[in-house]
Image (cartoon, rainbow, N blue to C red; front, side, top):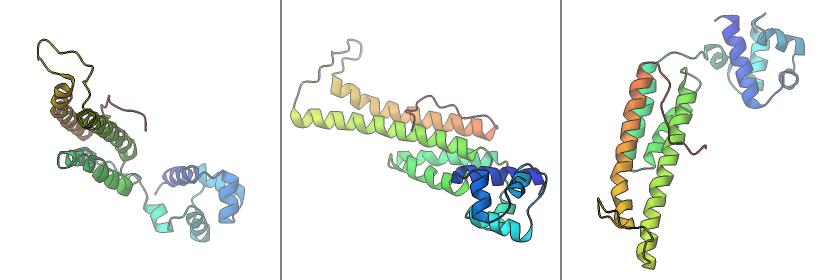
Length: 198
């Protein structure tokens, strides 16, 4: 492995742990200048130094050395397609991609970014869907008149409109999943417009 790849991975793991270079040096019980030289790609840690840094970052030395991100657009497409499990049950569209994302986010290039965007979209979609269901159920229980006007072209009441929107939401989610799967397979970034910012 090239020094720069290992240096970048050590730096990323250090930042993710919330350590400064000084804190890493102190936790690993090595010289601060050694940490600076390793992260600068000037030297590659070996033997005891590698073990100390790995322990401080809570990974094994083998994981640290082998932890290079691979390019795998097929996997990224499959990550997107895994969200189709929302068809069986809406929350599965979050749970299955989340499990895959957690397992592979540091192993395959762009998995972290695409996984976060996909999960954000699925969480937003589920919230909108469940709020729609809750609104319909609440209006039926309380037996209130929904203050939506009739739509002249479709002649839907408010509740009927919300019930009509459920298949539209499912279709929209499916289309976004397929579009993003194709974009990921072709090495492009995900196109997701519905996000509530989780």
